[in-house]
Length: 287
View 1 (cartoon, rainbow, N blue to C red):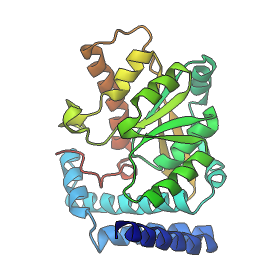
View 2: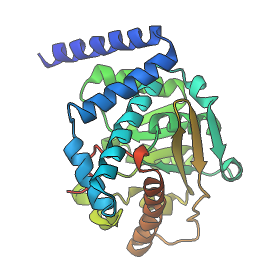
View 3: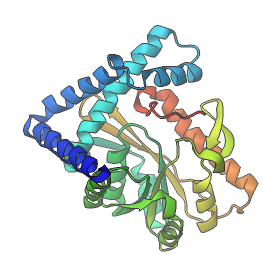
């Protein structure tokens, strides 16, 4: 029965995708943005969670401001859905204004393994594909989807753009090998890390934070490059590539792991505070 359900979900999804691809792109992206807004504003899908987390992080904002920001979060998410499943990658790449390319090119020229780090921010799928476009290939650590048909579909789409996916639960050895072989590996490290995470504040509230990126960088001496996608309107994007964080002169120990993790978090928090509508607030970040 589970597999039958998977087939029904998958082929229904493909039918909807085909329908939207047949429409003018400008109409599709506006419709999906409004559809996600409807889901958040009228159906109130996870809206209470979004508002609760926004209030905790931005106590200075009025309830009117919080509600307006919540609507923008759902609206932006709808645009991302359209870009991921309806648009052609090159169509999006042509609309990206990249900042920090000199730093990235210098890092690539050093012929080292590179750890790309970002968050569920802006259109993180397009951001990963764009970084693969710039660097040639990226290994991305991802969570497997419940529906294996959908999981295979989205991973094949990533692969066509140079993003080679690695399952989160069994990726460690492959990641270390890739970095030592001077490949690039990407991580999203902004979600709840569970019992193995470090107890650290995120956006001013204590939670569990991933330390795996810091450990890998210190172990393999691979520089960390943070990058963030910020959407402008319906079509344009800005990709902000931060200065590399080099760790080749830093010892691998618990103190340095925590210090490096805090530095990574600082950059992520900075972008979320500057562009809160771009972050995926639907995830339960604090538990």
